[in-house]
Each structure stands twice: as structure tokens, then as C-alpha cells.
Amino acid sequence: MGVLFLRSFKISQYLRGWINYFGIASGYQRCVDLDHWIRRRVRMAYWRKPRTKVRSMMRLGAHFRSAIACGITSKGPWRSAKTPGIQQALSNDYLKFQGLYALRDGWIALHHAR
Image (tube, rainbow, N blue to C red; front, top):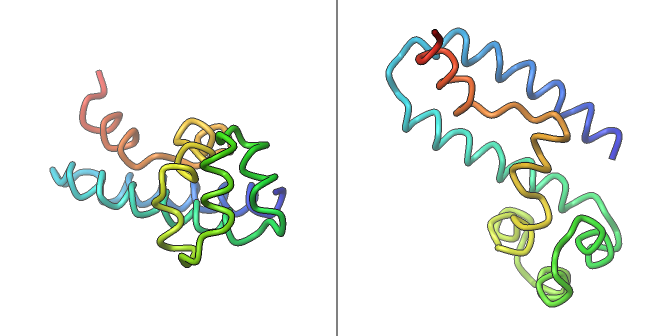
């Protein structure tokens, strides 16, 4: 997962620059929508990588049944990234711990700075 961590670092750098440039607009909902899309896209990238999907999901904290359901699904990576099992395993807190920057947090910090 070192490569994905490096990618999320580069994505975070890009997102920080993006929010500092476009964050002056009052489009909070657009930032939130884009943030959801980015997180789903990152989950998709994490989901494509491991060969043993069920074991990897359980290691990340998913329940056994949801890990099995996600591991044997015929859905593609984009649709799978929105399932509750993958969202549980790759939660927002986990992605934040991995270094992914949240546009929503950046927008709030920019508009509500004291």
C-alpha cells in the first residue's frame, strides 16, 4: 500500500492547491459532492489492487459477511466502491489517516477561519 499512500499524498497536495484557488467561491455543496466522488475513486483504486480481497477487507476492519459479499460480487470496481462493506473497511477516518485531504474540511477552514 506504499504506492497508494504516495498517490494519496500527491492527490492531497493537488486538492489543497485546488481548494485554496477555488475555495473563495461559496459553492459548499459542490465541494462536498466532489469530495464524495474523490473518496469513491480512491476506494476504487484500493479495491482493484489486492489479490485476496476478502482477507484484505477483514484486515481493514470489515465484518466477515460483508467482506465475503464484497469479495464475490460481480460488480465492477466503481460500483463496488459504493457498497457499505468497502465504505466500512475504507472509512473516511482510514483515508484521512492514510493522508487523503478532505475538500470539505479545507472549504470550512477557508470560510470559517478566525
